[in-house]
Length: 114
Length: 109
Image (cartoon, rainbow over all chains, first blue to last red; front, side, top):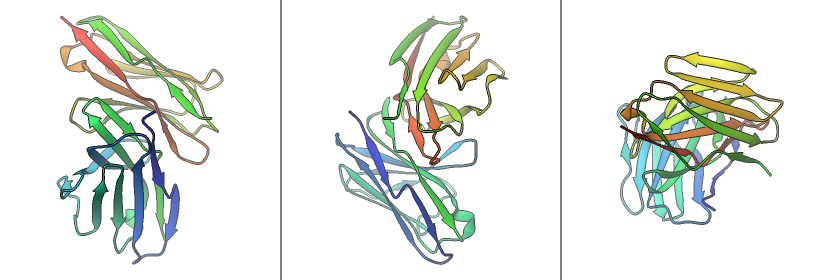
């Protein structure tokens, strides 16, 4: 149990376009979902925390107008990278949680902006 | 299928040493990560192994054997603040991350 999926697994888009990434908890209801950005070989940076039905809480330095997060239901959250630029190319990971220690991560989405 | 196995929970004593094991079966291998996560916080990167052997970083060390599909995280001189979840993740040939469920480490005085 406790499976989190992300779609797409990888995407290539042109500079200036927008890309939507979906995160789904497949067999449980997630009260909270988190979006991370992973830098090569290293750390996971928390971008935002979203609770179902309310606005996402963004970490300092993350542009909320650029990274739009919608948590429409207890099983789905979306991250939209608007007007993407090459520097937005990265690996984006979501996780879903029902309790603090029970956080389940998705497989990630590799975004390449050309 | 792909999976990562690590113990659900471990208990250790302050000042002691603990080894958290992680075994994996994935389609290809492009590196293994260990993260520490305290309740309510984002995971913190601990280590990255892509070649066999031991990587030492202060009190924490991580070991990898690709032929055995095995890694461990070694924590020395345990402190109370080391009580956290420890997550093992493997990057497969498609560059996707396969996550373990995490090991909850409880440190007792």
